Amino acid sequence: MSAQPVTGPGEEPDLSNLSPSRKEDFLLFAETPPRVQPEQLTLRQVKALSEGARADRARRLRVWHANLGPFETPQLADLHEDMWDIIDSNAQDGDKVKGAIALDAFPGLGKTTAVMAFARKYHLREIAEKSRFTPDGHERLPVCRLGLTGNTSMKDLNRALLEFYGHPGRHRGTTAQMGHRALDCVQSCHCRLLIIDDLHFLRWGRTNGIEVSNHFKYIANEFPVTLLMVGVGLAAKGLFSESDSYDNAPLAQTARRTTQLDMQPFRIDTDQHRRAWRQLLLATERKLALADKFPGMLADELSDYLFARSTGHIASLMTLINRGCQRAVRTGVERLDRELMDKVKNDVAAEKARKELELALESRKITTKIGKQRKAPTTS
Amino acid sequence: MTLARTFPIRPAPLPGEALDSWFEALARRLNVRLGDLGLAAPFKNGTREVAVPTDWTIALREEEVARIAYATGADPQQLHDITLMRRVRDRPAGQQMLPHPGRPPPPKALINGGCQSAVRTGAERLDEELLDRIKNDAASEKARKELEAALAAKRITTKPLRRAG
Image (tube, rainbow over the protein chains, first blue to last red):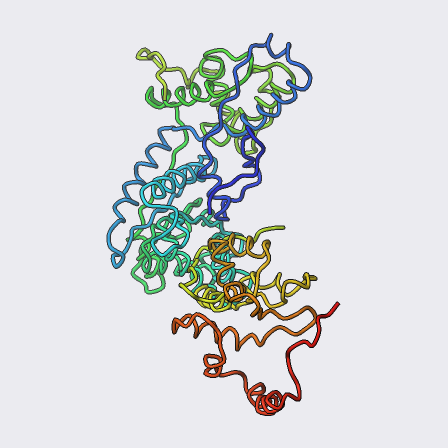
């Protein structure tokens, strides 16, 4: 078992058709080395390219600009530190209850990106420290990731677990049999981090929801696994509600064992926050492979503009920059400016919040510019 | 050929264990039916060359070995070695046990049981004395007496009188 992408010589593996809900794809995601940044050409060099070479460059840039991240933003770095603290403190013996993590934040802040980046680091560390196979000769899969669907039942959940592991019993069996097989996989493959993405899909009020949440708790209690739940509005949904009534007692127990982490959007209310925003733009800028880019293209020229259009949400920012770069390469402009970016559509939420921010920025009520203590940019 | 996905849990064959025994053990460990392993399925379908007997516990084709080795992480050579073919191959020349084309395969349970016993006891060969101790299915045991009498009286024989073709 190893990540073996099917590629020709010198080609980068095609990661566009992956689903991290299968171990093979997760391994490919985790173990493929980072892409190599395409060569920086000048406009003149681009013009001198032959037809074929230009098409080839365009193809490379398409993939490159669509996969710029993840960036080590302060939010991501803090989150990872917290996660390392919790997961490493869970190295206690198997009979002790393990603390769980709930990453509860609004959409568009890079939750899944941050969690997958962490999963990657954790997987690589565990495989490097131990080995690819457990002492019993089974596949070592320290991370298991599940995405929930709209109406996940116990059976669906267990089937999803079996599907991740590629267990031959994933197609047939009763709920109990599937549960047994799934837990066997979790234990035999030495799973240490169980990621449940989109937990907000679970309907807590329904029998299914309670059953599934109890099942998570059971897994966390019975196996040496750190549960990492990712979702939107988990607290509001009652994941951690404390109550004296017996109705909510099981949920209260979850609250006692779960550490809630969150991610914040970028803000521009203090110089420190503005500096973080600038660092992100500088880091992004360095990664762009446009022929006519120049230092400060994003961080100086477009700082306010990009903040207004993304409202400080990294997902919206990345969508915008990705689409802008695609357009810049396609049209041969090879740089990002206001004129081009104005033509690029962003997600609904960002477009909606944009007007208000733009007005405030124009009237100089707020700014992304750093004050007197502005320093030369350092690499992040 | 599309390869099946790899098994997460993969107990290796024990020393001397036969292929079908190991399959049963795999299915049991994975808590599935033998058919659900998805390993046995390809053996039952498709046309096979006459030279390779129909029972996969006797011999495996290369693509079957590749498929099983991929799914289970087992060593391909080891897979060849745990079929009955190895026992046959290791026998002295002239004592071929493989059926001739067109004839039914040897009694599987008997040969399999015999091989297990031969490995376990260290005899490492099949002879009448050892096979005598192996219990076969009831139907065979019932018909056995009559056949034995007929064979003893040389009324019938398993030896071909002359080579075909």
